Picture 1 (cartoon, one colour):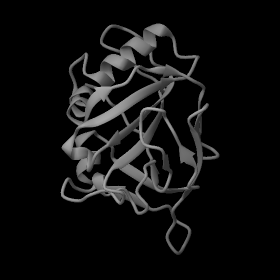
Picture 2 (cartoon, rainbow, N blue to C red; picture 1 turned 135 degrees about the vertical axis):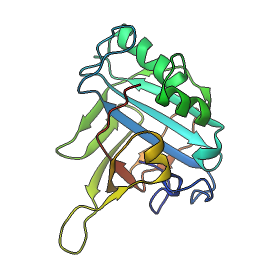
Picture 3 (spheres, rainbow, N blue to C red; picture 1 turned 45 degrees about the horizontal axis):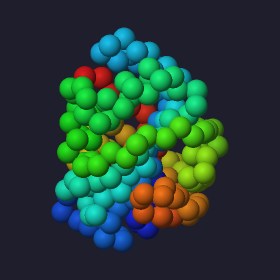
Picture 4 (cartoon, rainbow, N blue to C red; picture 1 turned 120 degrees about the vertical axis):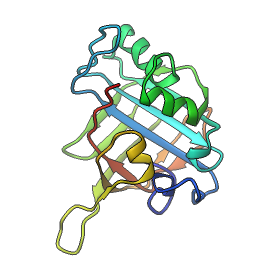
Length: 189
């Protein structure tokens, strides 16, 4: 989810600006399976990243914080932090090291992701419910092959409309969820 009132233009190209002139977003993730290069099993790990940028995220200079659900072990936190903050090699660390200049101290807070009800929440930070966008016949609207999704290996984005709920981290922009996507992916390196 992000702060743009229309579909997030940064998914499409580096040549446009976010609605507010800056971008704020939350990425909530739930690992169904996976193992780090050091053998850490990620299955069941739930975490989120709140971030903001002074413009289009393709231009970098972002600031972000990882939020780990209390069920995520210290070993999993360390491995996930290395992936996001560039402590290992691969497409994901390269992406985030280009987009994020400042990593804030991670936090532990309940992260709840309910795929059946399309809800995401981080205790004390924000909570949103999303509704799938559909065409005139009720079929879900998807996007394929945008610049950003190709760069990080996501085949299909399911376009979602969040409820406009507020999100707030004390060191980042306060914003309201105005657009969203959900997707499944594999980030193997």
